[in-house]
Amino acid sequence: MNQCDRIKLILQENNLKQKQLAAELGVTESYISKLLRDPDIRLSQSLATLIEEKYGYSADWVLNGEEPKLKQVSKNKGLSELHQKALTQLEKMNHEQVKAVLAFLNSLDDIEKSLLGRSDD
Image (tube, rainbow, N blue to C red):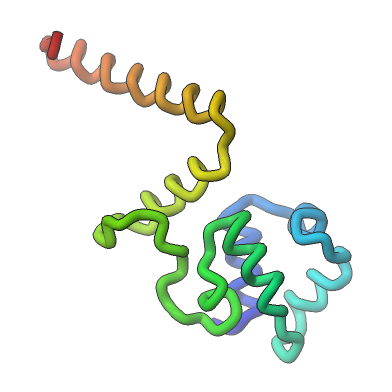
């Protein structure tokens, strides 16, 4: 997988348009288009680091395809890629958004308990 393919994958996995990625990175849409077409155009380290910060993909993976694909956000190295991505998204949220996610998770736990007919209270 070359750099073009990795950037396409980032767009796909994050449901982003080229225009959105360009705006997030502070570059032109035509630059993103060139990155997607020409494997000889190399992304800068600073842009790869920005992608890492905003989307959770390791800068080394973006630039060179070096694993791990996602930056390690937890000391638990056994987490799946999906778990790591979820944690990366949580890191980006403000306090109120995190509270909403926790409320949602607690409601799922309550539903599971009621379905199993038990209570931890």
